[in-house]
Image 1 (cartoon, each protein chain N blue to C red):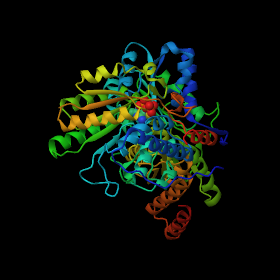
Image 2 (cartoon, each protein chain N blue to C red; image 1 turned 90 degrees about the horizontal axis):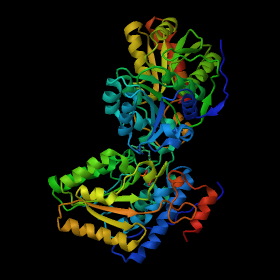
Image 3 (cartoon, each protein chain N blue to C red; image 1 turned 60 degrees about the vertical axis):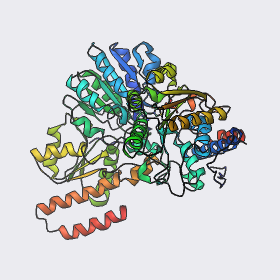
Image 4 (cartoon, rainbow over the protein chains, first blue to last red; image 1 turned 90 degrees about the vertical axis):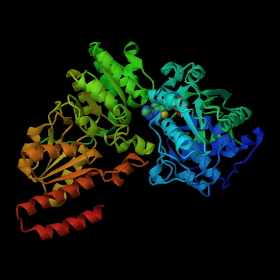
Length: 292
Length: 342
Ligand SMILES: Cc1ncc(C[n+]2csc(CCOP(=O)(O)OP(=O)(O)O)c2C)c(N)n1
């Protein structure tokens, strides 16, 4: 390796922001993703970059309640990354939120690292709620958490979960959807990263999941469709969920976020080939130069 | 005695992918189901050659498994492959009832298996599926040792009727068998003759076993027999019992949890027919970690070194049982040697 990789040492606050303020945060998260994947020499660039705008708002726009100095705070909201393979963006977000040193991002996928190739709770990474990777399982775990919070502990906590769109091909995902609606989980906010990309190609070619909005409506969800790269739309979608939760609407909320895999890197944008590979040195340099 | 030489490194998944195309040429009843990872498990070769006999099912392994049953019950020979964690575990119930209880002619490919899948980490390192599959009535379970053997084995499971599973991996690893190396489903092959200890291995551990045998000979003058036990089920009772009878001590080695896989299968055979001391080399009842394949094999003790020290240990146990008076000297030797190695 010839290029020296530095991680800027700062964190972002989780507070109310105007949409414009998220651009710099998302950019920094993407830079972290690029660098850590380059150093790891394997891993999933496409989804990690494509969801960075959503993560910027979710973690740094007062959407979720959490305390990095007390990761197990029992009033925190919980986030489950059902699409476990895009964990580089989760790790970047947790690091920039202050759950662990930013410097640790350089250990991604290395032997002994807390940043496993797919999140593993056995490594005791602060801020990580569950092991995930087998697609479709995280969303059911999130449903279980939401049932707990609504019916057993009867608290005001909220559960956020993000699935891919290829992931929706797993039948168990729809079992989770059925249960979420059946139990009227208005404390559950399900985000779908709808980039229409998966390993083998376009989701609509591999196995169509469409029409998606109508499916969720039929399952009795509160459905919001947004441009997943538009900060105003992302922010207002989460605010609507907050309202739904406060008003106890008796339905789970799903945010179908139209995104582009690899966005906004010129040579990755919207191409499924970038689902599961890291940038090489030249690509890393190019990508970082597009994220200034 | 045949001596195996390292011919190069190649991932076993290529053997699987290439064989499927050859099978497709020969037999139009061969059909393949994909669950999104076709370019990883190389069913993409078949897809590109025979698009009309390839069905993309999406990321839906349970559905793919049971759709394969429907095709099998209509006279086809469906192959369904994904990562082993998903094509041979996530779909356990479908395998048990729809595939095996039906005795359906479904072939399951388990790719990206074992610790050598590497940096993806514990979630993707399938180290338990042999334990599951071995308990299913009607199921044939094959774990080939290298690229070419994977190719032969893929052909073989297509030729038999009934459920079968073949395991292969992602990382480029040693290949050393040739067209002349015998391969018969259900028959363990003696890859090296020896009389002091029998090392029974499958998959990636066969090459490590050959190295261990060489080192045992060089360093200790111990003559180790190496058996490539590629078919875990049905298991070759005759070869295993004869080897145990001849050597009186057995080491098993596999890229799988020590519980439930090849080692357990061998232990069952020997406990019933000819009990001898056995040492087990495998994943020590824990989940894996992210890392480079070879680094992980070292870290979790899945190399010739552990096979070597296990051989010394098991010979010791055998001699102790038979009342050898060299015991104390030998134990000290082993302890110091394995300390230096581990
Ligand atoms: C049960 C299961 N099957 C297969 C895989 C392998 N796998 C990892 S990511 C992926 C594609 C996911 O597609 P999508 O949800 O659209 O995510 P994106 O490609 O947008 O990142 C697959 C098949 C897995 N992790 N789990």
